[in-house]
Length: 110
Figure 1 (cartoon, rainbow, N blue to C red):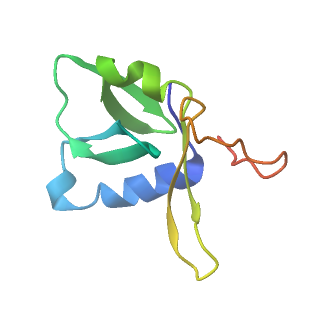
Figure 2 (cartoon, one colour):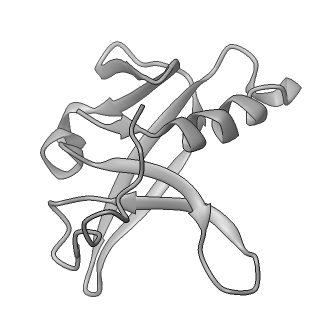
């Protein structure tokens, strides 16, 4: 469903140390905008109507309504700009603005 790379999983695991995140799961969602997709992630409670999955040791949830939009997405954590800014990167083949990474540059999923 969604692949969370090892680097992203490590960063999410660090965030679970926050007392406010205790007992919560990572939730992924997407908003469709005129410019493309806007990705949302954060800690949330699991609802009975959620899809509950796991990748690289991170349990996560999403709604059934979002399944088609998020299917096949890879979440990575890496340097975003040359000034040392790091952040989560969402690589989603369902996004109209998606450009696959060059061969040899794709993140390691394991």
